[in-house]
Length: 135
Image (cartoon, one colour):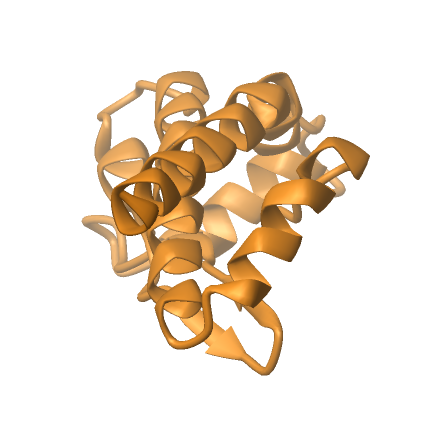
């Protein structure tokens, strides 16, 4: 299950500045992505069904990865429930429904509701780190 948040035009300026920072840019970008992913992950956890709380507890953020000029992270459900069923499959069934169950799209709604907050946090983190470097 992927959640993709793409920075808008307002982020172009600080992304350009990151490019000018050379080798430090990747570390700054990773910090910014982690902060943004944390906001989205917290929203998804809060929206997850609370039957046992195990599904929300299984949500995590992957190691931040960079691939060329892209930096990203995955927010995903890990592990299995007490009956051995993978949590990612349970989340997918809840999100999209099954032939016997209506969908309850908690992941997409939570991610969409926090998109702007995540982007703002990413921008703030990057700007703060850049200001520290240029002092």
